[in-house]
Length: 275
Image 1: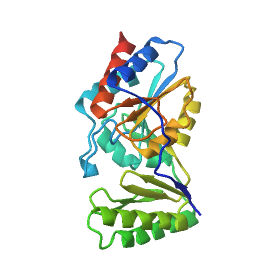
Image 2 (image 1 turned 90 degrees about the vertical axis):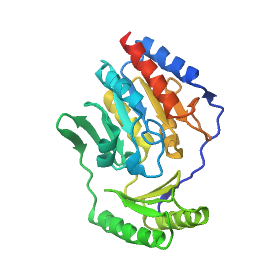
Image 3 (image 1 turned 135 degrees about the vertical axis):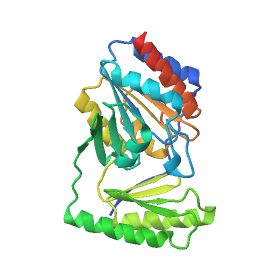
Image 4 (image 1 turned 30 degrees about the vertical axis):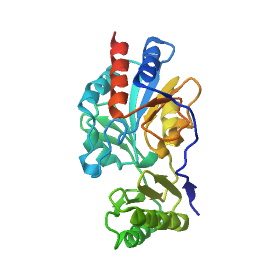
């Protein structure tokens, strides 16, 4: 039986506006006790505007240089935490050498090097591999006959995408995918227009906490736009900084309106770190 993740997020009155996020980032930059600092960022909808075709997603040009500055700053680590498969995240994200990449909602991890990715190896048992193959076949049946519904296969999961589908087709596909996850998955994540069924238990929150412990980070900044990012917000402490990007209920205390606003705040953080 899988563990189903609800698409409903906790309610909060997040403080909105680029000014509030920028001020929080600049305070961190000037606080030398907040080192080591880990900056964790979702990709789609956070650094890159959402696209109907996920292959067209690219980081906003204004975000490239701030990320380079973060990685180059002593005592600061950068991680991209995404639902995308690791190889795809690496191809699209344009991040500098030294960046940690967490893909498939925490099931995959690597660090960017000059020679490519230094990956943590993901190994499936024979039983898990068989379930993944069956998930792929059954998910294809969910998508069959529904325009705009398509299936993505990852190393540890199968994803049913509904962003391009009509409302009734999307609702029906997501309902069937959730039922399939209950039958065959170890974890189910229901995000914006996606249902991801994994044969391994993983979450952005668990992956972020593990990286924090590994790096000994005293403070963590995390920004994300999707309901799956609430799992990352949930592991942060009162001394950390959580930023919800876009609309929607959230447990984060700060909110940026869109990727442009978030990237502008990251630029202010990078500038303050180098001042």
